[in-house]
Image (tube, rainbow, N blue to C red; front, side):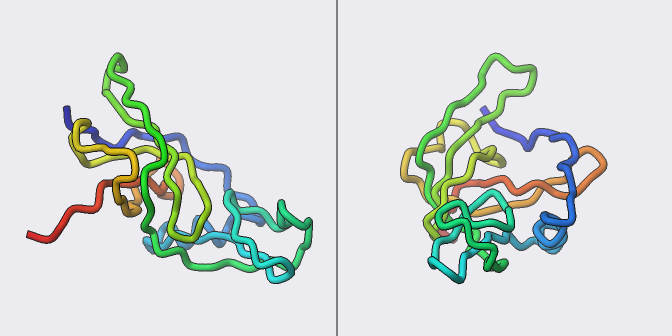
Length: 134
């Protein structure tokens, strides 16, 4: 069963997240990093959730990670997969797995980010398995 991208509602764009969504339009995934404690965090927010410092900055993520956990929703009108992906930068994000066969998904499988349009808003980061060349 091939998993197509789902149409997600438009994300809430706030002054705090505007840079994140602007980068998504350019095909880049951003994370917040704390200058005080060095931790990287997601979802995007100004205060560090580890040390509560406001000294944070945007960092461009590699867009690569591995599948920590997933579930395929077979009974939906259009089947889809929800997953937790651990990015190479160390944070875990909840996302959809797309553009792959459901039986291609594996725990610890390598994935990379792809961006798909939302319903009238900014593109949403989703992930697809990283396939060997050829």
